[in-house]
Length: 312
Image 1 (cartoon, rainbow, N blue to C red):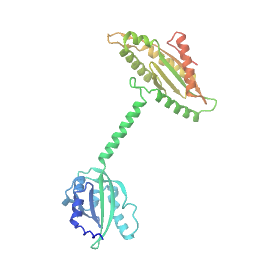
Image 2 (cartoon, rainbow, N blue to C red):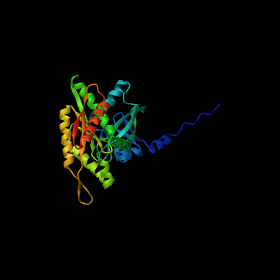
Image 3 (tube, rainbow, N blue to C red):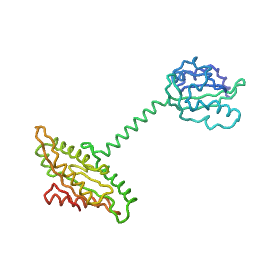
Image 4 (spheres, rainbow, N blue to C red):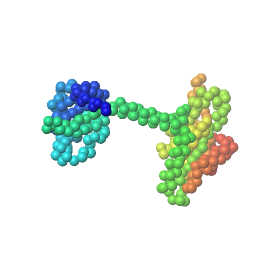
């Protein structure tokens, strides 16, 4: 038969609490602070002796402090089960410098000792966790943005273009009649771009693409979407727009590109032109089908001499 273990001296429990990583506070039924450990001193900014005998409300948020004592007394009188005690919840305490520190807290009913009811709580500083979560959320947002953005021009990429087109199609389907045109799409392509790269180098070609991207952002309407689909090809999306209206916007873009030179390293300027094909995206049609129509219109624009807009 195994010998019974001797009862541990209370001083051992005290030493364990004093050196615990979690902050610990104990209050009596009058909500006066009876004990705080070293971690609680560091968390609150107070030395142990400064808080002993003081009201816990001094550490609580104002909205909680105004009703905390009454809630404790109501719990003691009713002897009902608490919805707070024994559960981990997010909270905040007031630092000595008045800063509100976010914490995770688990409060416990410690029972009666010498006719006095005591309550205790473990508190965990969650500032680093929240900061890390915020940084991770920011990083995730940046990665998501990069995944939808063309690195060279900062325009939306093909993936983003298709996603926004699907969203526009869904909105248009909810707000238009079955006989109405939902929206229009366009495919724009720089004329003789390969010759530009061959003659001036890819650095100049990249500069041209950035210039054109700026023009697309500045010339299109606020509701329009301009994206780089790849190479020298750009996608245009015209929500809530007829084919005639889309052609006018596309013509404005074409004219702006033709009128805006790209400065070269030697001080000269390089003029480029753009051909654009536009097509309607009717109710029930697919984006791929509409883009194919716009592609055929673009091919026609190229065949007819370039630097023009053709509607499918």
